[in-house]
Image 1 (cartoon, rainbow, N blue to C red):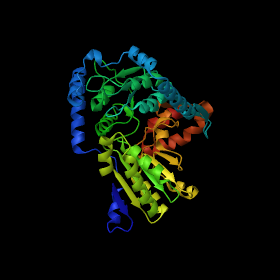
Image 2: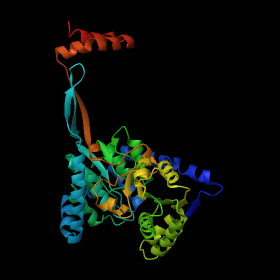
Image 3: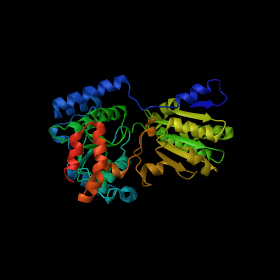
Length: 428
């Protein structure tokens, strides 16, 4: 773990380094562009070769798609405990999403024209669900469920299989419960390319959703314009800001919960209380010994966990805004003054008894959030991202007449006399 204090001689450099921007390396960009070119040129054949190269799994065109019967069987075979958990998560996420749907509306503008908006679900969307060292059952619930709540008729899911060509049956059960209509057992940048451009087996989608590693995120970035994308959610991260009221055991538990994601995950802790900082360090060392995913924990604890002692909680809030975390845990008895200072967090968990894991699995808002500093520009995933907006405009003769002199003035300035005449001709 890296520890920084406001009394350090290089404090300015430390705080400046927290101001991140989500940007891929040149090496990642080159790999992804090559993958996309290959999938566009060779379709299924490229998917099969790339899956064997990157994941070690040997697939055929016939095994790319997961049969609907396999999803149904996975749900039926799931334990009662898992079914109960999936049902509870689905209920909260679907209910939250349903309340967030954009609604059609209409009204009159100043000239009397009828104006409004109508919303339709996208016809066909793609959701990426990471696999890797852990089957992210929760991500299935936090993306596919929103698509279903929006009324999307075709919900395509891509998720990587293991070296044996299999996907965890618990993930299949979650996809069945969430409402996926097509599931393909491919991952990585090649899955994004397949959903964006299509292959012999996979029809292209119109928008792609979901988190992934740096290659998946870069593939979404490069596919933007061919399809729409939701946001750029990469490796998970949490930042905790606490004063002396924070419980060190709870804080350490949240740090370790984040660290067990492994790979490029990050966990940070900021406090203005030196005693709490020391107590959290001790708790991390104590609790880590009891956890099972040591292979994932060790590299993150060494390189991806940082602890910062600031001169004040207000200074800590400024560092939060610079870092722009995916998840922020805020623990303070001055919530009414500190919370309004936070402007760039994907989701905020308030108080000692609001663990980030509840947001990951159950609370209701989607856990798909921007990472790597992208919270400065992007919100988290919401159900209205699965809706397409269309504006509606209707004029009668009276409102057209009232609009005519204003349009004629604009047309004269822009030198577009036909624009002006197209309105004037209707009023003479």
